[in-house]
Image 1: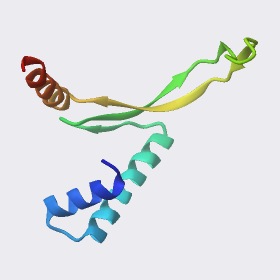
Image 2: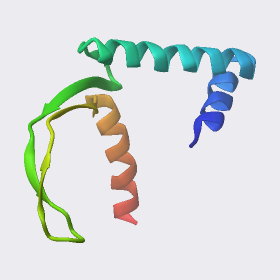
Image 3: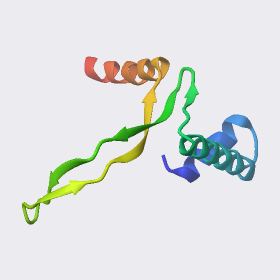
Image 4: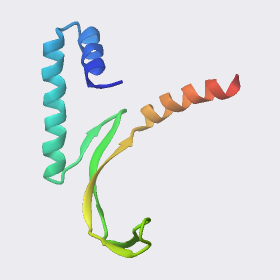
Length: 99
């Protein structure tokens, strides 16, 4: 599902226009981005959490030249699914495995 398909799905479920759904989705994304930028966490009970995690610097290898390179430390965004989302996704895969 891409962004435009998500906007249409939100509009249909909420019974609002596509333009309103687009505005809501963009507001949500912006709120999550701003929260993560500040180093805070966004927690949606039952769905999951958006947070940042620091990655330490390390030494890597350039696969083309085989030379060692230094990889700088950085902060990355991550999503951790909540219990209900995990169960929902796993219930779908359990049905596929039983066939």
